[in-house]
Length: 397
Image (cartoon, rainbow, N blue to C red):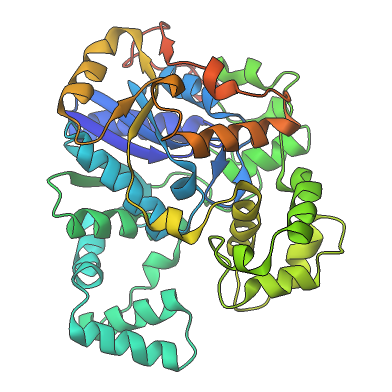
């Protein structure tokens, strides 16, 4: 039996190690398969480490295989992010369980609400339409419609991990998937907490500490510490000149078809295109209607050339980034059973992976300046330890 975890590992930390251990325990699985974002993540930002580094960190700390979530989905809103990840896992035909952390921790609360969202009855659609006509945002209108049908509040789904948890279960139900969902209550500080908190801190807090140069205080597995030495950590503002160039050279029709450029948002970006940095532009463009994260995604999708149509297209392949040396049979099983082509090397199908090749080259402009890294970085095979013997932390001693 194989259990999947959908993750960003931006960066890999002690909470992720605990999550893998609990997934193995609660699902009684033989293997942990991680489907992970590549070089860019859901908040519309570059990951602080490239996908090769984060793949190795995952394999050395409990994962048995790492699959890449293609960039057009990894950098998208929760419903697209979750839907694509679940579809890839479902079409792998080797995953029996999906495990994720949540602020709620009770799988039944998610499933009861997901039944309403997944079914989208005529009554639900009518209530949704009424909410939108009253000026509610789509998420708020959708939640209000479900609450009216269920007769109780669904405020618990507004927490970041609960939002993704709900979308995972909705995606499973819509696909009528046999994959069984499991959740554990999130430990320690909140998803968006930016202060370090003992042995388990949020990825946001760790990123903030990294950018502040406070690496010795990080709550991370000790076998990842060397990755932080002399590393260059890219930020979205590093791409400001690229974004400014594109705003000045792309025609308005191209901008309007860019993912997350909705309701004429491209015009607001053009209005403030003379500002120096992406952060300054976003602060000027932002209104109550648009979240900061949505605007970051619109910027990133402009830089990467990701269109709305690309996000709506179904996943076309399963790309394996890495595997443990003692789990090669898992890759053989995937290759034999998957309903999509399984790729372990860009050279196998550079056309299918053209978006990843481009994204990797853009990412590395501000790290090692490497070009063609997707061709030189083959399948990562980890020989360290065993999947059940995870790395050590300061907390585990």
